[in-house]
Image (tube, rainbow, N blue to C red; front, side, top):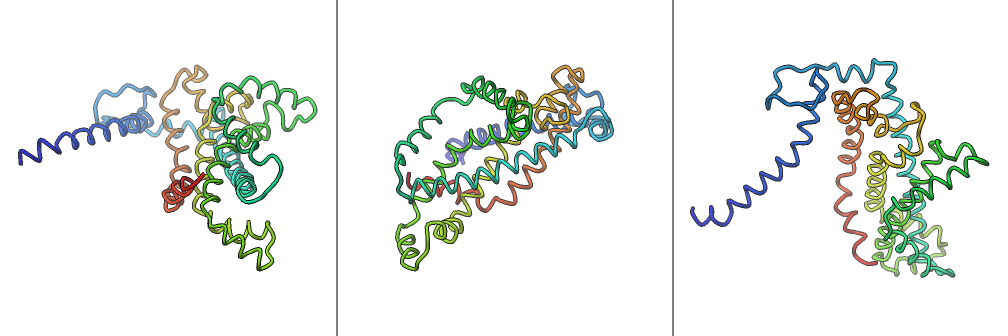
Length: 283
């Protein structure tokens, strides 16, 4: 007994502490969302009174287009997830299987770009999209399609490298057998690569969706109009002075906004482990 306490007790203590440390922010958000005062002050572990006023405010106040923010976030996130998978998968297949001029320098350039923090390009992206708005107003600064293009450009490098590692792990004999049967490169891509890459494609789409849904800096910079904002930018108004730092609706909106992510995460859970490890075999 003493040996077990000496060797294993500290592991249990550390594990319990880390679990409590991770759960506390979620507990604070839940308590704040049902706190009628709309503040972060917690007077007791179990609140004596609670109210759904914060949730009702999100859906009943005409000055708060919460559902519009949710729709904007879902549309942008789903679009980025689908388009990034399509573009990244085809690019990774080309870099891994096809032979063309500039192949080596192109993949190295993608890796080099990823070494620099994305925040360094913020001012350049702003100026570029401001110029784009002159001749293409629907894709320039302050538009959702323009923000979508910026998101796609930022996600390509990581996704291509992850998918390329998976394509490199697929035996080349499958490609040779498909060529003997008369399959073209496009048929090999759709009939061999896409079915085999389903787990890693699901992971790439999941990571793209979550990253875009939670992104704030670019969305705050691009989307100014109240009706075009995403959920992250819209909720920031509750704690940024516009609504007198009302933490209650902010917490309630954050909990509701997490529901789509949880649903998608659980639905793709069986692909996550196999997909994350698949791209690390080679590359």
